[in-house]
Image: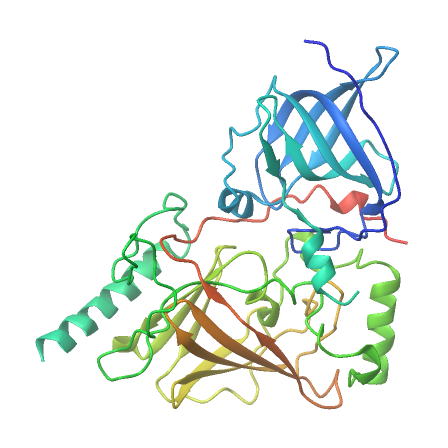
Length: 133
Length: 261
């Protein structure tokens, strides 16, 4: 299956926050958004964050592995996820925020599945909007 | 009174069950009808039904509750920065933590988060009334728990510092009032990093408004960190037909990437 890269970074002025217990801002830049389309190589379904690993191919055919985190399983399960919602071999498109340290990591806001479903990935900008920063 | 006897027997069973499950959180019953839940004609939980009550007339607060999550980042979200009654060192430390974007938050190392903020986060808590033992049990999805003793005992004046402190409760009319002390000052009060010390005294006032809604006023009294007490007004809602899920923090791989500023 051909996997095209759709990588776009834009400043959106949003301060995304994790559905988690520690700082989003220390690790990710909510103003730098990324959209990654690729093939899932592994799903690490564990606390305090799940991780979806995916191989993303650029226009020159070079493949890079990215790691995108989501919320904790207990929160995601209440959002309708199961541990097999995203699995190895799936083609997905993840929308999220880039890591500050330059590593190939992102904080997932949503995951678009190959069948067209879009699932919330546990990053809550609503929380940030609710709270005084 | 057979009804009352059955209630106490149920309560005793509850506490035994809680002890059995406290270290093995149930993860199987994400959706499971809760007995005794009032329902509308279409079978959905009636969250505006009257507050359930114990045989002695006190509200039954038992249930799985979820805060609004408004305060998990900033427990003082309703207080202007300039109005926060920081002690000078606490203001400096808070500024430092904000300036570094909370990269040193101990909870990122999977250490416990503070008791006040646990009632506001995205994971629910389960409050269980055990009248036969004169006790409330507070269970959290992080497989941790608190015991709130209702038997009239007093908090120690020289408690051994601990992450979750020690709690005693009392009824004030229909309000459950929980006083806690004996904290170790290690967890930040929230993600933003409001500090606390071993002098922290937390008061929680729970009032069940109806079947599905509760008001919760939390008072933070820590004279070593703040010049006067301050309050948080949370509004937990009941999560019907569900149970707590396991959520054990393990090996947070984010830590090495938390570079902050």
